[in-house]
Length: 303
Image (cartoon, rainbow, N blue to C red; front, side):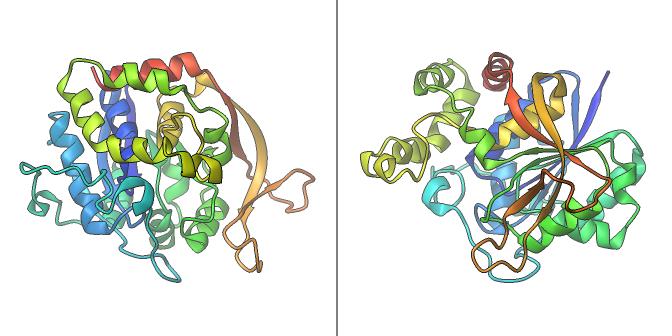
């Protein structure tokens, strides 16, 4: 049975890996890719998505520009890990231009596409949830038309107000791959070496854009400071893998919200283990993933 996905990204390297994973699965149809501020500026995010689609020869998939900053506060980025442009600062003289981005905005596109396919679309969100929060405010009935929502998130480097809105107003089946979950499922760097050594144009593209991040992860100082785990972690690919096949995950079913006012905990995802929130809607918080199936999906992404 064909799976219809709508993907919302802040296209850094792991977003690219997640997109390529989905594009390689025959029964998955990506209806559109919406862009939002995050790993880099919104302009870079749009350019990066187009670069990924070009590398996969899938330029027919529409790309939409979304929010350029959080609902409140200043935008931050992840240039340390992903490079200033979001894709490892790897030169690409043949990169597609921004004129290929759709005229329709991302929020409008999310609402339209979901309404065109009620009950059929799974929304995969691997970025700050700003676009999703704005969409539900414009169309409060939007979540009940979704088949499911798959989020990579649960950390402070995002848009807390948007995360609060999404986790409290999207009452569809919701699956969350939080930061800690991805860290606990790191893969050996030896697998990454074999993965990137595939003799394909996609593998060469990935090796080029991933080199900056790999160099950083293998830097002795960074390891000592525990800024990044020593293994290979493709964070956003976990949410995508679950959207492709949720049978490969095990989850806790708990109510969640986001802390907005704490002095030291603003942006923290709160998991309600004792029914303190009195919420009827609960999210599936991923705890385990079949790593052999996950590695197969990653490997196929670069074939």
